[in-house]
Length: 429
Image 1 (tube, rainbow, N blue to C red):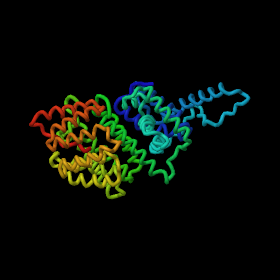
Image 2: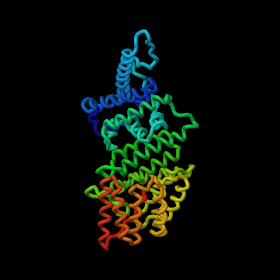
Image 3: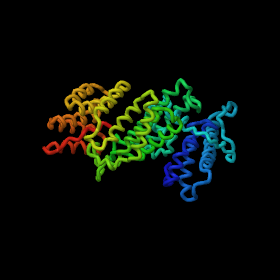
Image 4: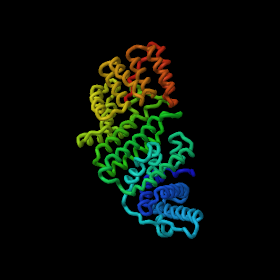
């Protein structure tokens, strides 16, 4: 089911209320899978009615009431199906938490169950794709069609993905509450990782005609703000929010008039978002002294060094290299090692960076990724080996699945025929 979203403030209100409404219904009745369907239908009803009738005085209560009525219908339908399948003599329906009459909606409290929902959607029983899809639908309030469009898959495919995820949550029997303290830290890392993946897909699309999907990056920032509001003292939550803000601050300058990719060294920094930069720097500056220092804080600190440099030439690469060394001690991710090689090249020269890239070629996690030959091409160009650089650019273009990335890499290869072409500084973010 799809429909047109209400515009402006009403749409933002629906997105903000979605997890609160779902939390109220699940806390009262259980049945996460059916409750999530009921809340989505309540959101769609609001999308149809509120633009014409106006936002009700108590929008959250309105949504909870509509969702409770729909859940009642779904549960009764489920009971009827079971009755048809079982003989009357063997009838023994277990307690399914049938909702009360529609005129008795669950009480609407001031509690915010957003964090509980995020932990539920990021349950370790779910694969990452299921965690992302369920988070965007249940916590973000997106329709299945919107989630499908965000990840460039057909709506039926996304419907099946979300359905499987909800079934796994249901079958796991996990209660609707925050996980016990011994599990909480690990589960929070799963929540942050899902939000990080959502942001990355929005900021740099892995496939399709557009370099970025701003609405997806904005949704990741919005959800991370919610987690930060609920856990304001957690330094890694603050670090992730800072990283998103400092990275997204550059988005207005990342594309040219025709949607082409503009590398960081060639961007008009006056177009960067100063409010995001100031907020991101403030967040990471407060988080780092609190410790322990985690990967998101370190990545945010690196992003802050880039954002605070008035020009590409003024970038403090020795500081960035020092931060990457610390990050490398905490993370064995190949992309971190790739960016570390860039920082080494900017401090010690391209030959030193190319030597590190040679070792990465044996890592199966990144050996076939377009970023590896793309960085190699940049460093070869900086070293003056234009023939090898051109071959590496073309190899990277052959691996890239994003059309703007392909066009950029082909353009870099073509420019090498121009002896006046200047190699851009590789984008380490």
